[in-house]
Image (cartoon, rainbow, N blue to C red; front, side):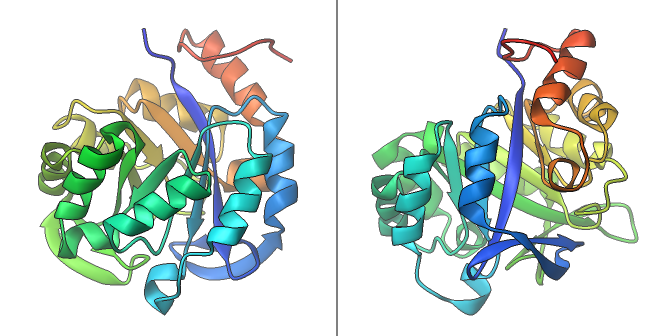
Length: 256
């Protein structure tokens, strides 16, 4: 049985890490390198680093920083933000990323998913979806850090991304982001019900039980979280211990 992954998310803006709520009100919370070094010691399965302003500000990929960070990261390292073409994928992988997360570019040019998977393998192409619930209860996709409504339902887009060749999907609730009041389980299910590739749940984790619910009820293959690990005494290692106690298969060396 495949192991469920616990993945801290690092939101990167300019020169430091930030935290927001609902993809807004960003405030600085620390530096990138120390965070990566700490997570190396905490039994995380992977790390996700997202440059939250790269697409909106249209700035170039900071390959030098990615290279420096990847040298310090001893777990699989996913990098997202500002990826516009296949050559960007190549440059990030050369800089040390193990996977790339692609969001906004896929709406305008879906071939970036297909070509990326063909050239580098679907295992390193993470299709990222940010979503909000409409008044009618339907989940709709947004791009450009939650600012641009795409008028396509999440389930439809998720299935399309799988068909294009994505190796996994990262689904984030914009409304739950940073709230620490639990994942949107129905949103996660809207994706897991229509695809067969792994789904990473993101947005809203505030407790170990929230992680468990995303896996047991939402059927997520992995749980990504930021605030729970940055602002509380809860740790990835203890999270995996809790999941282990609930009979969820996780990679774990010891339970503290």
